[in-house]
Length: 194
Image 1 (spheres, rainbow, N blue to C red):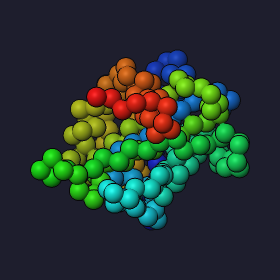
Image 2: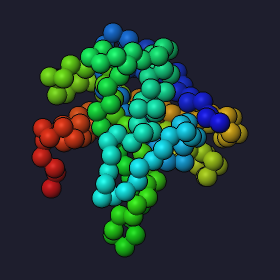
Image 3: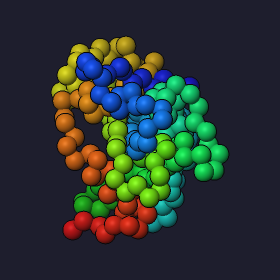
């Protein structure tokens, strides 16, 4: 059974202009977190984990993007071609390493999608959301990274916490550059960093 994705209201007064986002404004959204958390949200998703035969996007990508869209905008995305409502643009697979070599196993996953971003916009505003897993450390990571108190028992077996960058201790000053660069790289419009 899938758990609920929980994105808390913005801590700031006034709220950050992208938390929650305005429905009519273009925005690139990235949500990412530990694979164990992603599997709690979309347990039905299949994973194609083969380092040498990667598929894009992973079947979980559109499912996670759609779930995130619903929580942010309070409605189902219009998935018709050319609607621009929800367009998966990139994904991140955190490969498990052994002896400096990646294995056919991931432990971290993220998907990036656009809402109303014109194809010609190479540098849209972004919203970075991090999933905070609490079951394995009793909320220690949440306590370290969030400026508000979290009670792990409120989440275990019920919901998965996902926090936009504006409500974290980490400021994410390079989020916009990094997310937009990764999309450009995926689309062949940028060269890999050295």
